[in-house]
Every structure is written in C-alpha cells, then in structure tokens.
Amino acid sequence: MSEEGIVIGVSSARCRLFLGGREVDCVVPSAIAKRQRSALAVGDRVTAEPVEATLWRLIEILPRRTVLSRPDPFNARVERFIAANIDLAVNVVSIKSPPLKPRLIDRFLIAIQRGGAQAAICVNKIDLADDRDAALQPLLTYEQLGVPLIPCSTKSGEGIDALRALIEGKTCAFVGHSGVGKSSILNALDVRLRLTTASVHEKHGTGRHTTTASTLIDLGDETYVIDTPGIREFGLWDITPQALREAFPEFEEAAEWCRFNDCAHTHEPDCEVKKRVERGEINPARYEAYTRLAQEI
Ligand code: GDP
Ligand code: ZN
Image (cartoon, rainbow, N blue to C red; front, side):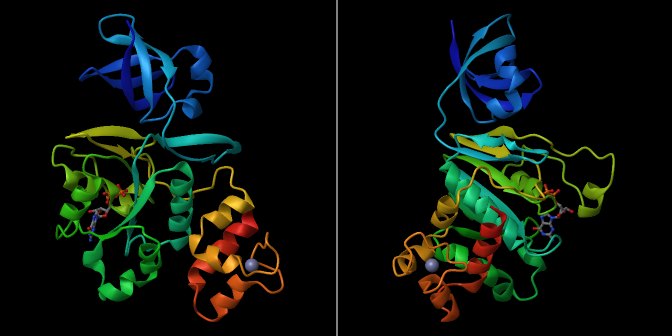
C-alpha cells in the first residue's frame, strides 16, 4: 500500500520522509537515483511503499507547485533544486559582517520569483547598524516592489515575532550567504531547533562541518521551514533576456514607450527606461543590477 510523504532530506540513493506522522528512511530506485540530486528535492511530495518496518521505497515524485533552483556550480547545464513546493522564500541578509550584497539579493529574488514562490527579505544584525535608516536605505527599493522587509536581530530579539507571523502556516525556505545569521534566526524562531551556529571566522575555517544540503523542519501548526546551505555565489538557472526583463516589473510601463518593442534597455536609441533612470524616476541601483545581469546572459 503506497502512502504520500514529504521529503525532508536527500542523500545519495536515499532520502528521509515525513510520512503518516513519522520520519522514515526511503530507498530511491536507481532510475531516479541517477539524477537524484537534481531530480528529487527537499519539500517534494512523493508516494512510497513499505519494504520493511522502517524502510520505504520511493515510487513517484508528485508534480511541484513551486521550485527554487540554481545551476550546478560545476556544471551549468545541470539544474540543482534547493527546495520544492515552498510558499515563501526568505532571503536572510545582514547589515554588517558580512556586509549587504545587493547583487546576491537581486539574483535570489529573480530565482524565487521565477520558481513561483513569494519572496521576503530578513535584514539581520540590525543591532550592528550605527544609523538604521541609512543601513536599510539600499533595501527600500525591494519593499517598494512588494517584497516584505523585516529588520531583525537575534541579539535584541527585534523582528522575530514579525518573522514568525510572516511564515505561519506556510512552507518556507530560508536562503542566504553564510554568516548572515540564518541558523541563529531559525533557532530564535523555534527554541527546540538548536542548529549549530558559528562565528564567521569559524565557518570559513577548514574542516568544519557546515550544512551542505537542504533540510525540512516541522515547526508545527502546518509551518515548515527549509534550511538551505549558505550560498556565496548564486547563478541563475535557464534565464532568457525576456525572463530577465520580466523580473524588473518597475521597467514594464516605461518599456511600452521604448522605440523598439523588444528593447533590451542597454544600447538601443530612444530607450524610455534609460531616460527614466537619468531623470531619477527609476532606481539607478536596480537599473545597474539589470545591466550587470543582462551582460552575463
Ligand atoms: P549562518 O551561517 O547564516 O547560519 O550564521 P550563524 O547563525 O551561524 O551566525 C553567524 C554569526 O553571526 C554568529 O557569530 C552569530 O552569533 C552572529 N549573529 C547572528 N545573528 C546576529 C544578530 O542579530 N546580531 C549580531 N550582532 N550577530 C549575530
Ligand atoms: Zn528600452
């Protein structure tokens, strides 16, 4: 008799499932295992059948509602899934140590949006800001685009309740550069977790165990959190120039006035987007992010 479960962790040839209120090990048949690290993702809904009392066998991966993926760092033609079936992806960033990396934020937001999930930004280590408004200023453009912005501190406790309210009843992936305090945030959200946290210095040292794969954590009340490995560079999976333009919704209205209707807003004459950037009507930082990404694809 097959049952439906949810993937909480993936390793070679096996995965771990929540199934009927318990956690079980599950064998992944070789056809799926061959492509497994890309074919199966944490958060996947699957069907499985029992082999022995505590061991199950995967039958089928059910269709995904949303995904969060990126190209394999070593082979750009292979898609690596960070999480599946998430409602929300929270990009955890920090004000200082490590400093804000707008390039990385843009890439995360595009990947999240393309995969079909909602995005939010958790701005951690707000306690380290000398001037709060100045520190948050570079992030306001995201908030204007409808991405919730939550200043947080695991030291002072600021923002933790707001974050808890935001994720309640949802399946959420937490993504971010290592050292931003993602583990500390997850621990603050649920004291039962006790994920290992480390100083930035320790984490960059050699021989230390850090998370290398995503894991799904059940916080109760239908709230699931997927902890993902700290990511330093984030490539974009299979993005076309068209998809890139769509990722910048604030260009959309202006683009209707460009001379060419397939205007890339880079080198073309009579480009309304460029004119509005010059007039300060479109945020120059966002336009820069766009042109950087446009050059790469
Ligand atoms: P992760 O790599 O993103 O999981 O980061 P960790 O949770 O391991 O935290 C990295 C470092 O940042 C640790 O030394 C934490 O003590 C520190 N840290 C985490 N949250 C905060 C915060 O809100 N404020 C300050 N000042 N430091 C923090
Ligand atoms: Zn244009």
